[in-house]
Amino acid sequence: MTRNILILNGPNLNLLGQRQPEIYGHETLADVESRCAALAAELGLVTQFRQSNHEGQLVDWIQDARGAASGIIINPAAYSHSSVAILDALNAYDGPVIEVHISNIHRRESFRHHSFVSARADGVIAGCGTEGYLLALRRLGSVLGQ
Image (cartoon, rainbow, N blue to C red):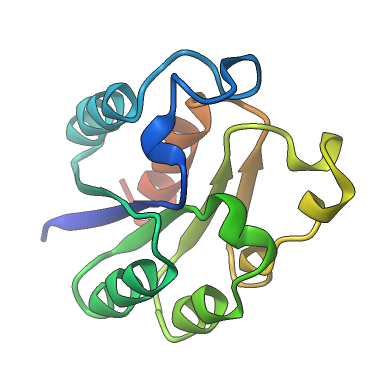
């Protein structure tokens, strides 16, 4: 049975490597996608990697994952702190969810300290840079019985 992992990225992550590299690093989202695909293959997983600046698109992808994806890794970016819609969509999804943040949101502005998504996430990885995506993949591999 193929274990499909949906990796979702929220707003401004398309600018990864260009926007605030002192916080987010120099690696691009394409670099992260390539690293995730390589690790997924080692773990016997298949990834679908997506990014959108639009909340509704992320909600649609989460809804589409019902019955189609074995797990979700989500970096909701700024929507972490504002999107009840993404939380509601994740609550309708039955598989494991890992929330990833490249920076440590708890060391940043106070409005970033709360994440709606964390209320649904089975795990949260923050402050590990883009390596957090790989940690999340390893965790899902373990949870799904690698």
